[in-house]
Image (cartoon, rainbow, N blue to C red; front, side, top):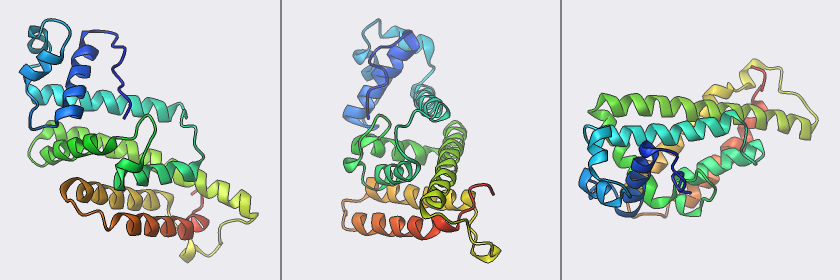
Length: 219
């Protein structure tokens, strides 16, 4: 994942950048306000001036990163065709060591995300963030599913089957991909086994290839 804090514009971004680099390099276990202060190029006391504690800082970091992703997708700045967007998302969540691009999390940072997401089970601030994160990524995936279905219709020269029993809801297709990928993310981050990765990626690819022709992009 590219460092979004390479050129901080204010003290908040400088602190978040220090926290991001500590997380990326050392993980959650070794993250403390003191360590962040050591990585901060100004007075470490400013960290305490801006944040009451580690969790407040981490939620703000997650929100900043999500804001950046949401801004990028709202501006349609992804230089990828729709189906490639879906494939890139699946790769980033099932095998982050094989993913590239500005927003690809990378293996070490994906493990951090899993650790922080687990906090949502007992902490409302984390839960609120991951509720929003799922909505943002869900909307991105649904739009990508609709766009990929529309592209496929043009390429194949035919419309979606008129039989309602064969139609697929783009929101449900997006939610299915998101749920499968989230489960894969947890499995990748919490086990050493990688034998399942290629098979799962292939099956998700087959699911999309079989399902996209049945998606009505205007539904």
